[in-house]
Image (cartoon, rainbow, N blue to C red):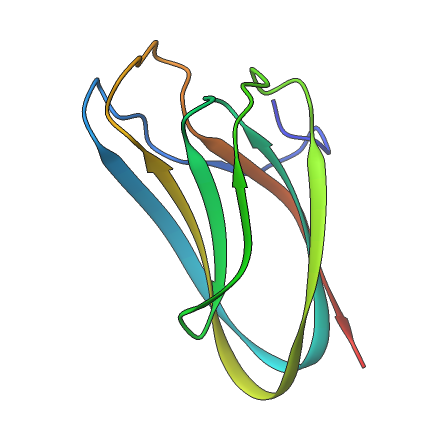
Length: 109
């Protein structure tokens, strides 16, 4: 269920245990980055890091993939590693947990 009806990514499920899934990219700034996400499990967290520094973190509530949220952040000049991370605490797995990412845009300054 991608936001834009074409493509997107979903973190892996936990299968009942603790799980961490991540995807990363490298972007040269200065720029503003915007991404849409849907978080699936109330105790889970979705975190965005720029060069290992947290710039965004969000915990549940469960949205069942039907509520898309958007966040934006800026990066300075130079090359930066952007990491999107999903963490599942290891309880209450129902087969739908995870985070979906879609529609990432980079606006250069």
